Length: 338
Image (tube, rainbow, N blue to C red; front, side):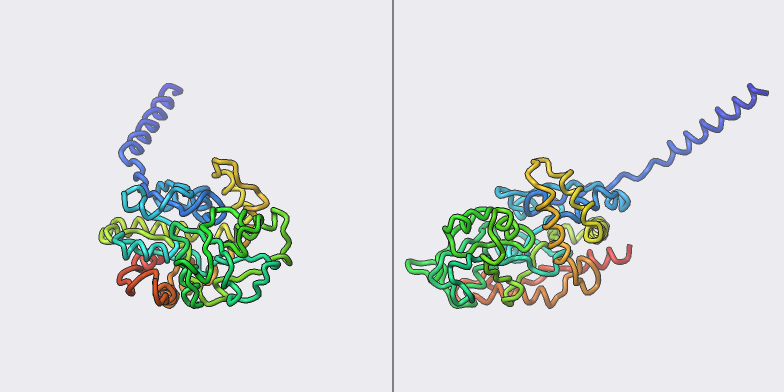
């Protein structure tokens, strides 16, 4: 009897094994995301989506590549090194006009976090006071919103006698700390707090937010290429990615301490601190709010506002004509149906 039972058990086990062997799990679709900057809470939603299994549940195998000062996401995707990139719209549209066919497929940040932060002892109380001062500006595509703002104010930024002297700012706050510039570029979620952590007090600083000055352009969006959007299978894959990423962002905003922990676990440099990332996560969570049809929705009105600002420069506009086909709701709409 024992022998018969054992035989039955062995047969059942064999049949189960054969059934499993005959129906292998579907292979996950590989997708590479190139970030605009280093691993930090600015990109928490993507790291959270990976860590919590949201990408895996969507049938995706996502590789997240950190950025840095020597990494240009546009060049990476143009060379085939990524399927999707995070970029600011001014940079993306400028690159598109130069021949790289980028298309915005989702807009994770609904508001701008960009600011000019000035020393109060520089006596700058209004944008009209910028004239005659040195202002720190990031380049590598990040200068476009600033140049558009200065053009709107009627200030020249080049030539032998510019109205404002532009200091090519490194990705740090040293020019303000060392009084090399009256104002520097900062983000609400990053460099401003670096100044505070370096010992400056809020009442020693004057802040001009692009959002408040009516010159805000769209920042962290997701971009793919026109070619990828012509393939229905790739559109489906991108839709899964956008939906899982939105879920990651929503989870990060609601579980900020856990999101910070996940970001720090992915920081292979060990350069980030829990204190700074906690503050960054609090501020970044404010920027993803407001999508009219959900997280990641690009409002055409916001796109048009960004384009108008970039084209407003009388002498040197960032883009020379209104771009056609520079954004698509195809992926977002497909994601909503999943």
